[in-house]
Length: 500
Image (cartoon, rainbow, N blue to C red):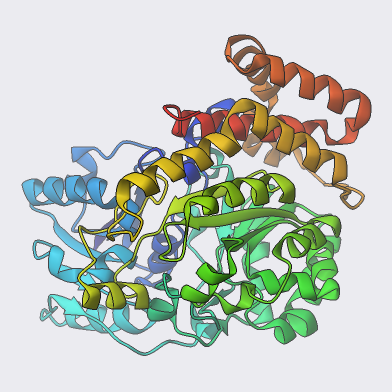
């Protein structure tokens, strides 16, 4: 059997970092972890190829080669998914599809031959058995949540690693919280299910042996969902492994704000190689936090919590939302003020959307306030709800927030303020073997590209030179980080070019 795994293309979004990747000659941020994990679940004797349309073109010859095309996708990729399905139909190759996009709305894809919904550990096996018996059905689903102890490591041999900025791993699924706008608990449940310590170390070792050196992102929706297991078993093993392998990876993940309450956990994460964490802050307005049931963020000083995490050495990236029913015209200015004062350089602010499967979706459907499907890109000025303040006021406020945090002056001020306060741990010495350098060669011309594009061509070049010289003389050790953030800012301004 010949299997072609296809990952559809992302549009140009906040998280695509497409304009930033050009500085390091990379094609995409991360490889398609879900498809690579599914590939590892398929029979060993089957031939498998991967086409990530974010790094390579899908050609007719690829489709003609395959017996089946496996597609995995999220909502933001829906337009590319339509193209892939149409091309598969024109070629006559059968389609197998799964992932959040198809799980949320399988009725939208009747042309897909086989829909493998929910988690593949439970739904892929029955499909493969039926396929072998010549009686494969159209749809396979399960409401049960599988144990992750038998989830295989991704099939990394299918990936051309030098096309990506970072590799990715998954340690756990599920989240103990119940934010109204989030569909994660519908997809993966409230109970945090995690891989064993041995699995985590084996997956890190597999990346190491594949030659990867650099960034690795743990894609968990809440990495600290089970703190005890992390602190007692997983992180100590990771610390030992990283020390043994001379710290080959820089790690990052996502976590809830209560991470700030556990200094010991933060220090363990840093010792294990974590340098950054994405935190869903949403809003500094307590009434809006109450409205969306974000109780883990209530009853605390959010600004102090963010600064606590950063002061201990983890860079915080933040998620913010505007458009709650309790939001007022003053909310937008408070968002700007919070982001600037918190020194969160990478602040993703989006309009409130209600994904299918979330409690917000059900509430607004009962209230008759739902419109079209979500685009999956919560920074494209779209929303599938009728906001109480009216769309025009919401859009105007949203524009004000974006201009207030990503126009060159305010963005560079925030970067400078962050660098002034940031005190990272002593950088660990990394070991690079010559046969692994090929994955990092693309970074060698990045300083020159940065100088030409940001220092000469960019309209914000004055801010660039001011920050370069300030960092060079005041925080020379952090100059590479300063340049990285300036490249990020370039990307953000490109995404929001009509505003910034």
